[in-house]
Image (spheres, rainbow, N blue to C red):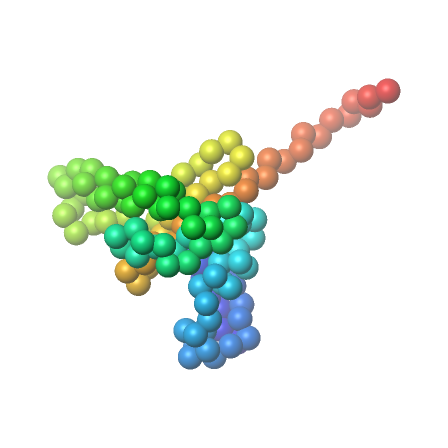
Length: 125
């Protein structure tokens, strides 16, 4: 059994390493808890795979690649010229995006944010 970590989430697969390499990225992305959409992009922003709310979403793909370009140009004095980000999180009220770079691909997952219900001793009648 192999364990594959995507976005810091361990995913167990009953496959050998060779078989893991042959698994579609989409099948793995579908196993991420609370994900409601995903994109896998080339370094220049072309959509390789997508699903859920982000299926074939070229607009989000463009925004993500522009954000990556911007983040790589932020401040070469504060961050060394070879220091690029590994992961970016963008948080909204009800969802968040996680963007990771790996193997010359950009992986983006849109996940729901669950807010805990407030406990109350009040009884509504």
